[in-house]
Amino acid sequence: MAWVKIPKEHHPIFLEALPEAPDVETITMFGGVGAMVNGNMAGGLFGRSVMVRLPEVDQQRVLAMEGGAPFDPMGNGRTMKDTVMLPEDVMEDGSLRGWLERAIAYTRTLPPKAKKGGSAKKAAPKKAVVKKAVVKKAATKQGARKKR
Image 1 (tube, one colour):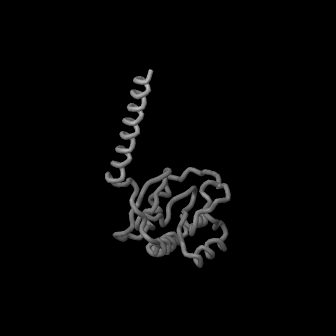
Image 2: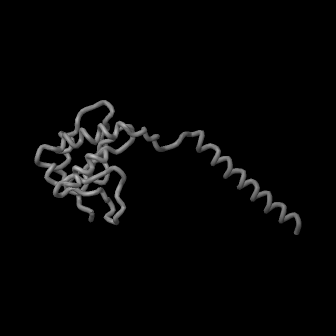
Image 3: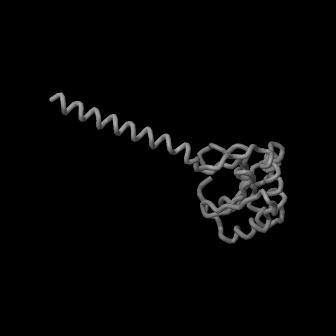
């Protein structure tokens, strides 16, 4: 799918259709809005429609709909696992909330993703290794000077 700028008027439609739940977070990315559950993307605006993560049976339902398609964000034939694009009609026909509810329910069944960023403990050994390498290099240069 070729890149299509997300219409700003779709933001409030998506947010209004998004069920309120304590484990559902909204994020902004690539000029759109998305919904996350336990660190996993459940759905989000993309182009003129919405991508959703669904179980196989619901994916097949979407793919059977006119305008439904596998979610291929780069347009290179590499689709994202468990995700489909809903037909553009969902932005106006009132069915978006039901699809988002299904996507959130399915995403809750996935294992939580670890938050990115790492801990300070992981960063410290890397710095120590770098320092040792610098010390060894300096010692090697000094040894080479003495031999001359």
